[in-house]
Length: 275
Image (cartoon, rainbow, N blue to C red; front, side, top):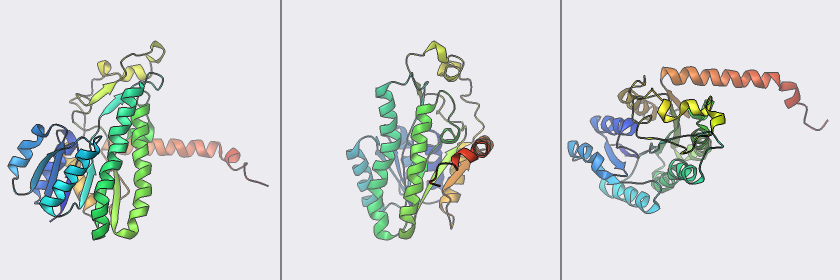
């Protein structure tokens, strides 16, 4: 029986994934900063679910959650790094404390959990690591520079990790969801406290007070969870799993735009080698 460790299960995609994993008969270590928000999941699956507190910025909690899962189920087969939240601001508006917290949660939190599960996966020569990213990593909208940066960091980390782990029988996948109907644009979204007027027509348009997308996103978390399970359990899990029609369209446009710009500057790019 496959055992999953999923971070950020209190709502959204993490919660949907926890339900989907347990419904298919797998074990799941279901985690959240406030464990009370996930007791209902564990109560519904008392034999196969373990609810435990986990703030991924706290190394002691990461160690404890991993150890508890291994003690209960004998090992962790799939790690899903889903815990995270949004942060919007122009780059100049970004505040040091919140930006550092963003990276500590999403990049270094991901690193902490990866390091916690890899010894067991290496010993068994099997396992899968899934890191949840965002389409922001590919097209970096104005007002989301820091969020795009942290997600791009996760994607680069995952690509290197994938190459390092392949000979050991362990896979690594990054998931880029589009807009899903979760709390991401609601309670999970933060922003710079003090906007700068010069950015009103760029980053300012994406501030929370101007956002009307919450509750209208096209992505279905249950379908997203099913897609992640299908990809992870396939014979050859991908490096990149894109979720949503909006994500597919945006990423293809971003890649085409990048290739067009490379073509435009190709002569100069190739002019810098020694003759």
